[in-house]
Length: 511
Image (spheres, rainbow, N blue to C red):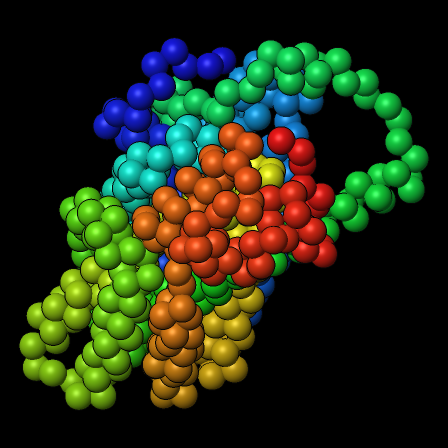
């Protein structure tokens, strides 16, 4: 159902962004607390707990890979034509958010936790992948997309703050050793997520599709396909996925995104262990320190302004450098044992959360502009495929990272349900932070220095796409435009927009 008023207002931007209350909140809680919950209240070993997270996310990653392509083609179904090929999944996913509460039931077995977590991951992917394409659907303007993404990150920051602040308050009321705190927290957030996703459904719209195209979709016959034909479709889908790596800007973006986000996840996975076992503090202190994530709320507004003025690459450099220094600061606290421990941790955590909130702001603010680069090559709009590939690698990498954290902890001598840990386990926790987290951030930092997509270069690219759509001649291209387009795509200009399309791409469509 198309929206009549399609102005990107503040209300619209907030309505769109509310889904990231789930994206930011649910996975912050999972990243910070789920492995701790498994080893403390579920009786699982670190490897068992990490295996649940890894298995679920790998299966989910495979589902996610095809979810974008499925939503790209969902107009073939009546539901897609009625509710939208992207927005339908928000409508379906809203009530299913209630599955989240099932993750936090204590003293269940391995299979229960695996199945419930797998279910939630798949539901989240079904919502988030189509939702992530909506800025590209709703507008082509850089500033308006940034407005949508800024609202999204503000809401995500709110979710991240609540996901760290509320558990700390529940621990204070119900006690450090109460699994009930986790269950109440899960129930509260499950309801919040359901409401937010539904509001996003009501607040958004999709790119206009001509009545002729809609009629063509409606009249398509559902023919039974042979095994060979189905295999050919799957093979072509995989080829389409692989073709995304031929877009230079996307390769750089994906490397930065995966390394930085995996570093953040690894840090979240061990930070509670660091506070409780390395510093001999409490889980409530850990929650309170993580709640400095509230800086992401005003930060999202500032980062939106800085992204337009400075560009995403420079913002990323500031973020990763800040986080690296702070992780070294946490290491110094462990080794130096300052007398004013809580104050020192508070200062480091406050600065760390500034860098962390920048880290989360950049990737999905950049993403809506990647399909524009791809359109210059393929003459197609493939937002869903790019969202699927990003989500696939994100979930695969975090699955691997989480499993490795669990395996390394157990290899270092970590004992589940123990109130203290052997020295080898504590040193392992510190090593994960100083070697694993810092190493990944360094890779992302180096890659950010060669990332060229920003407001200026994107504007040049879009102007060129529009010129060619209006039957402009490729021979009359401005030299600077040609240089920018080649830098963003990674291909010679002559091979773009219906030229000799580079191998591995779907054939460019005619104007």
